[in-house]
Image (cartoon, rainbow, N blue to C red; front, top):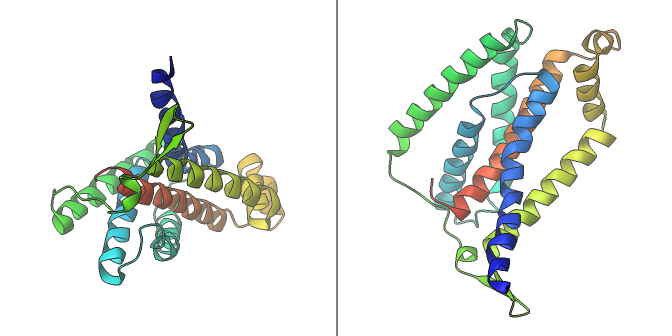
Length: 214
């Protein structure tokens, strides 16, 4: 009977990682009604950035987020402000085409710089596990993924609910013309939203790099 607990519990815990991967993509679609096809590439860029930080400074992958997350916010902000904002009001097709082109550029740039060799963010969390009442075993890395995923979801919810920028993002999403009348700059709001989405992608990129190869 209890042999089914391992895959069920581990699947639920791993779902925390997939939640972080999807939350940024979902947020952009909810706010701008657009699909960013380069979202996965932002995640992998963060994995490589974390790898470089670890190699240069000898940090734990989770500690490398101190450098990775701000850098990815800036990157997301800039590509939205200078690239996607140019077509944001022209429908979904131009946005999809630009994000697809950006995805191809980023993928090939990563191949040229880092080669196709598989890499991983090495951590002892991968080989450690927790035995729960002798009933099932939880890999520690899955527990970390779930905990970080839950933390990100709660933090993002509170940010959107309690901060001025969160309110501005909601306003721009619900009633763009009314938001403009209230003095909200939609270009900056959309850029900030993309920056936040890039931060969630970066978080998932570090977690993916710790859990799997990339």
